[in-house]
Length: 294
Image 1 (cartoon, rainbow, N blue to C red):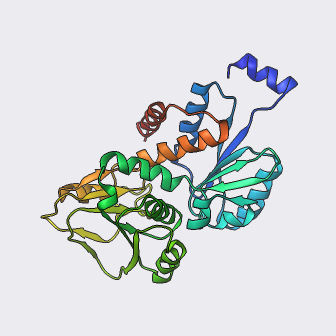
Image 2: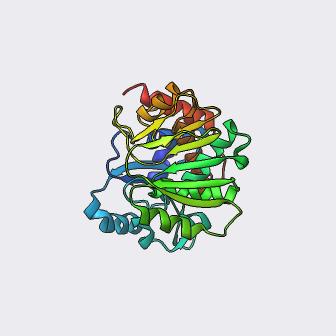
Image 3: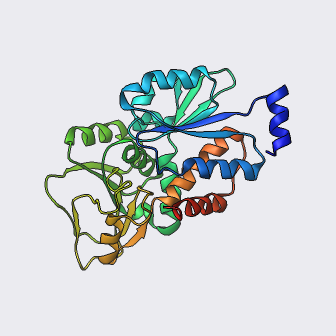
């Protein structure tokens, strides 16, 4: 939207739709740049704000955003599960995985929580793993991102999903929530010491926040040296090449970074908010531009 059009809207209305990204921390999160690039390319007047919210201030922050009639927004760690309480409606994906990363304001003023993380991840994974439905997938974590990914994998119908998490009760709850939604075999495994990845033809997903803004941090896993046909994925997007992905690459695994998931989930959100498909290549280029400044 050019300066003259912006001024016209300011003086005569309607005001530009507002969107948000809330989380803690959010410094280093490039979503705002990606979304505003997509909005500009569509000629859409929306504005997107990145807002740091302290964990003990989530409730007043949410009520403030709703009271100011924000048109929608994104939720990142650590609020993807806590935010459910404040919404009027949940989509099937959000309900099944008990996590929300995308909020949309309906015409009647109510707010719908969705989860586009799992959908975005699945789109990226299918592109490089055409035989995904025949595979076993090991997912590390049981938080918001992990829950969304496991949900979409089950809905897609992969052969088997194993949830690996240190708190077994969390893994068990996630698996129980999804039991029976498809033919996918769902299970959970303990994670007490170093998790050994020895099986061929696996898809391995690092779905915790370990490594986010910490290039040297890595979950406690070890890859066998003679693995065949293993795909290793990380949901962390900053840094793009995480310590986990470096370790997997050294073991001969094909790797998938977190940028594809970030672009795809963002594109799905833009379509929900505007009714139009954004340019995903342009969105990815905007992320690469942002990371070049780091």
